[in-house]
Length: 266
Ligand SMILES: [Fe+2]
Ligand SMILES: [Fe+2]
Image (cartoon, rainbow, N blue to C red; front, side, top):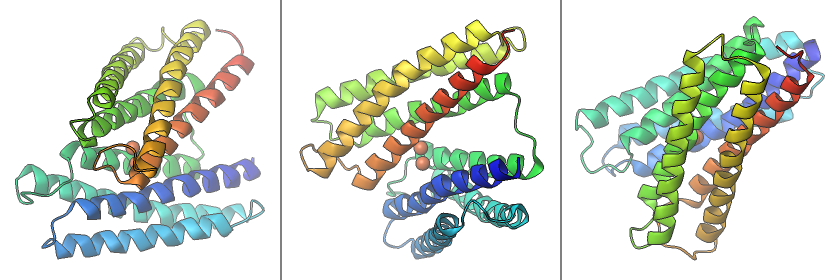
């Protein structure tokens, strides 16, 4: 039990601290030259999460659970701070205080939701209250389907408009994931009656097909961007970032399917 607490905590922190570090970079790249204070804050968060990432990578699985508990709390505080920073930026953009900046409001909201998710995970781990499987399946899918739908929209808007075929594909993914998100919310609203093994299994199967195909699209886009074969204003690291988040969602779906298959039928 203690082992799995340590392993799970380190695994979450290794993945999400890198993500938080990269968000600081993306936000920085979207500011105007004169936004020096905001740029400085972004640099500060970059180094905070770089250090957290390095520490998480260095800690062995044999680390004392008490030490991990304290580390989780420390990380949680840093994540709360970056969440406040992201919401502050969103407020500035929505009140037109950063005219001409290049951070979309939906992108800023999106990265703040990811911070909030990370913070909740750390809370749950430290309090030992992970959600029961049928609830986790619905809630994690609602969260990640929205994330995937947003990614498709960002890609569609950051590709050069002359890349008509790719823009069309991104728009199709956006629509597909909006529909899947509504379905997931419907299933959530029908709780607990909807939480039968056949319905949850079908739900995961259907989501997996779309996530796998979006993951492949992102991989192709990433490779094309890295080799400078398409026109866009997508940073190569952003392309890789959204690809990794899709991989994580797929991995989660796999875990859920395995646990569901092992769980007693309802
Ligand atoms: Fe992200
Ligand atoms: Fe994301």
